[in-house]
Length: 230
Image (tube, rainbow, N blue to C red; front, top):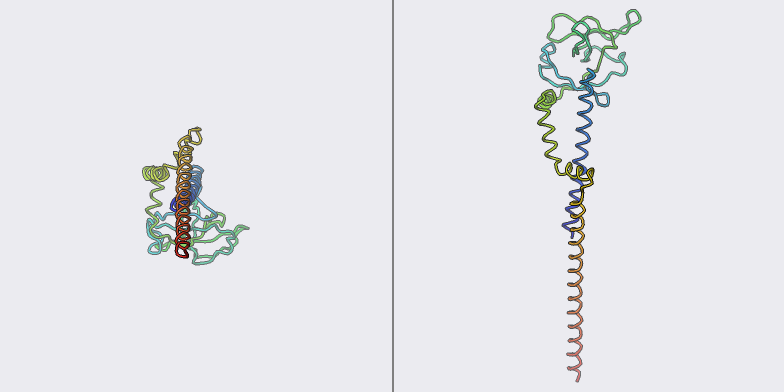
């Protein structure tokens, strides 16, 4: 009985963890694909992940490095030395990650700033603060492989297939419930109830036998004591 209860608790915890992971993965995939379709940058709670695709920031940032950016709420707080990701009109509306060399300043009523790639000899043209997409928080090591999986169609299919395999039993249960074909689950519950009842009856019989033995022994001891008295 105790083992069975422990198994049920473990199974419940496993289901909670599994479905929490499923929700997180689905949420992440929806955000990723929606952002890709809309041509925007994938963002979760103001945080975005970017992959360095050029050597303009070497040796600080190498090609293939993954960086984590946070949305800039107040561009005026940006300062020299900050590494930012911005949309560059000069490069065909491409996202660029460079270091600020001139703090935000006003020009013709517009807030601007200037950046430069560490490995570049020439500074970038001043950009509008509105083009800033985020400020780099840190470089995320060893995440380039995972990021490449999301960018690869085959890698994404393999990832989805693995998710389906891991949660195959939960998916089958959902399908049965949705198709009103959860008879096997009900039968399994009935079988468990029968097993519990049989185990309870067996324990009760054992208790009754033990009680009868105790009464017989008590009665025999009483007869022996009477015999000694005589």
